[in-house]
Amino acid sequence: MALNGLKDFIDTLDAFDFEVSMSGIILDNKDVISNMVAEQLGSTSLDGNGNPVTLDGGGYADSTIRYKQEFGQGLGAITDRVTLFQTGELYRMIDTEVVIDEVQTMSDVPYYDELMARTGEDVMKLNESNRLDFATEILMPAFSQEFLDKTGLQIT
Image (tube, rainbow, N blue to C red; front, side, top):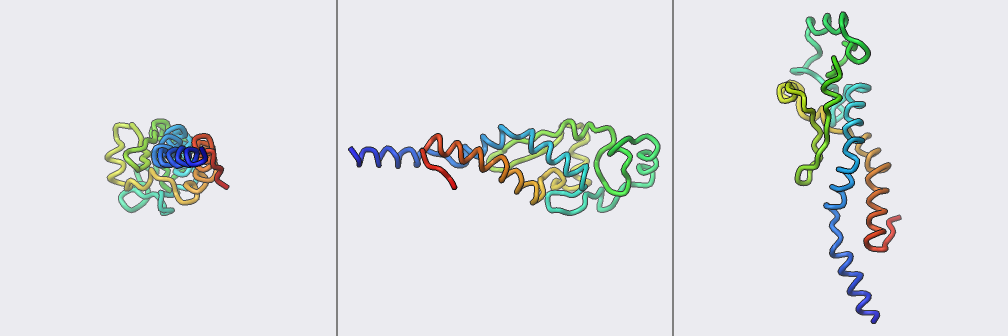
């Protein structure tokens, strides 16, 4: 009987799919990641590597600065750093997906591809601090609970 129990336990561990579990947790919390990317852009204007967000390697053009100063509100009026915010449409349309084994955050605005060509795609990635916060506060607690539920083993 004890060997059957051990075999069942091993089968349970063998059937547990780490990648499927992680992908599911990320998808369940994709809005958190999307909001973190938007907050990172707005509050720090840093990309996923911790570098300042730039447009074609620099800041806003003089004409954009004038426009933002005249019509911008809140983040839309900031010109000392690139926030990618004027109307908020880019931020409102941010979405996160898991594609194969990679987390991809993007926006459905019509000018997204052009914007990525000018900024680099790292602007839509979480920086190290935010990745650590997501892993510590959301991913690992959820994973630990799922692992416990499916295997009976507790991660400490």
